[in-house]
Length: 328
Image (cartoon, rainbow, N blue to C red; front, side, top):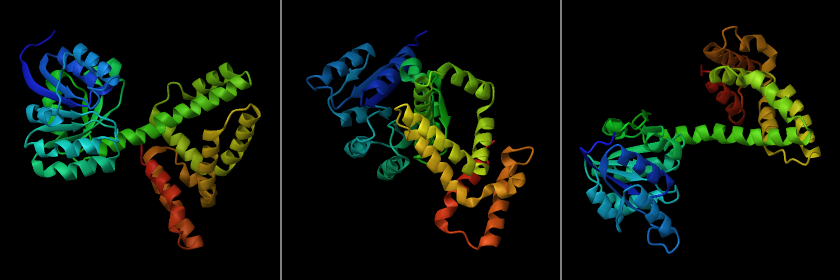
């Protein structure tokens, strides 16, 4: 049911897919004060799409982003990451105390922190917003992880409009870090799947491979897989690296470029010098999960005593695994 009592002013700088879908959703929640500015709105070709989207979402386009900021209670910066700093420079003198400024660009944590440094003296409430779902499907209810000094206020302000906002602390950049690190897995696993399926189809065993993987993965909590695979990689790095040599040859024979498999082999080989299997019984306590972080530390101390100080450059893989071992 559309509510007619909403008088908050929402402004979007950039009116691409993200802004369009969020604006549509907020209009459906009853907000009528929605305006936008897009650098391409007067472009001969792209301008037609911007105006079409604005009409569909009941959004008024304005010619100057600074005028938009002067008018809005909540400003969304929804531009490509390469433009978000430029937008900040353009509007920073128009931001005001208590106003919400939400940057949902896919920028790096360093960029979000730099934006905050530029605008913090204005008194604006800044939110680093990371969208983690399908915008066309979820619209304004797409899950957003939010950090920054304005994150809590952003969540409270948008709660009546059913936005799905999860807080990630008061440091600008934390939300973007979550999104980008998460992307390493999401995009990486997709690339692995594509490479795996290409190889499976080339040898006519796609159905069998998928069924076999389903039995290994179905119904098991993600954290359990994470702990099992990370631990196993550390302990069996040498053997598994050798096994991947066969996988690489298999893909090459089928005419498939083994980009992800070569990278996986290199990652395994990076762990071999630590010789972690020597005391594998200490690395794999029965209860797994948190407790084996202590075993990684024990192994490291033993290595130090036997071989002297470990060079800084060689500690990174073990340190990384040690941190991962605390998950669960």
